[in-house]
Image (tube, rainbow, N blue to C red; front, side, top):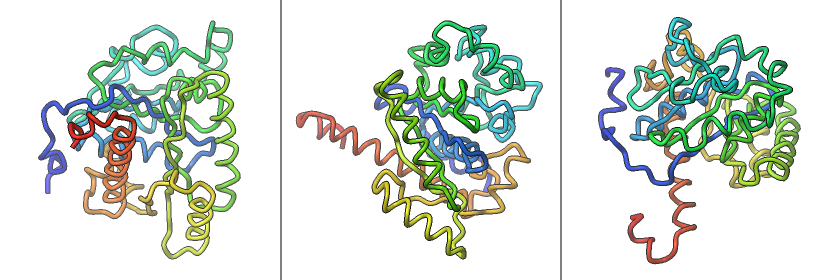
Length: 288
């Protein structure tokens, strides 16, 4: 099956249901699957006809590389957007995936936290760059760096919601509790509309008792906030970035690819359900 197969039913211009949604994919810990989730969730959403932009805010630039954006294509980057030297729209680079763009990262981001520390309203730099500037996009997924410094703070202030990838490992709940407290502080002080969109369990090993125990504990503590979809450990997911491809295109039959397809569907299903709950009765029928 060709790489274009999962896009075979993609309409040329999908209707926009709720305007631009900005989602920060965040966890202060590294190695939990943030970038992998950003790449493959974006691809899954694009496959449904959504117009998606991945904003790479990690100085390592792995999301850019994983979507096939080489250094030669990173003339304008997320650093330029943060620094006010470019609009977000001008920084968008199309990928080989229909309906998916990237605002790539560069090593310049490494010094951004120091360079921008004295900037006026430094927590709102990204917010100002994204709001009402990307009217052709349905979703912006921000791949946050590890830690909770100025870059991550900008992402959380700009975002409507936070999606937290959580590796099924020891002390996972402890780190998540710290992040939840940070989200609450940002909501009170800087971004009152910020919400916890959900927690997605990643790197799950069916053979590992600890993985099952962590998954059970997280669900018991956070309930429905945790997505039903679980992302398994899968070698094809690990291999895909070296080919500049999401796993959905690298090997769409793999368990990892299928899990991310299910996650995209679950997110859209929950979003539609929430939208129905918010609509007045007379509009219910129009939503199907």
